[in-house]
Image (tube, rainbow, N blue to C red; front, side, top):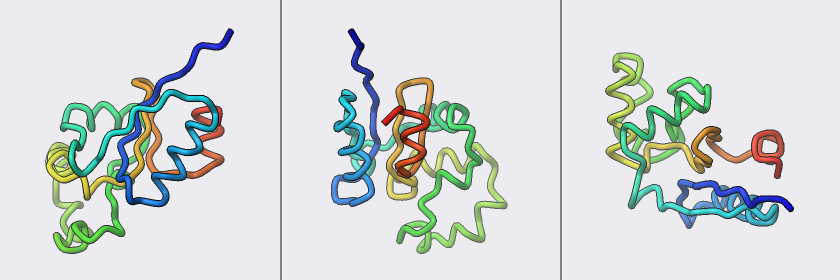
Length: 123
């Protein structure tokens, strides 16, 4: 008997990529808790922990194609900011965070690529 794995997905419901990720996880029988990333972005502690668990560099966590990122001219500013400042910035505005983020408390993925989900989530 297999135990059902539960993951949390931080996503924006109107985002096509997020919808595809959610559908992929559910099709594989995973229990998914969806969190609206704009309304309830992860706090700085959660972000810091997820960054460590993901093994990704900090800039991979920013939604570099988003309007807010461009409006704030972060492309030029991030290199002058400390990691703590960048984490605080992500925690204050869910629109700055690349999505979807999926976590089970130990593993984390950012963005959605089918082959990455196969490797990490077995889906």
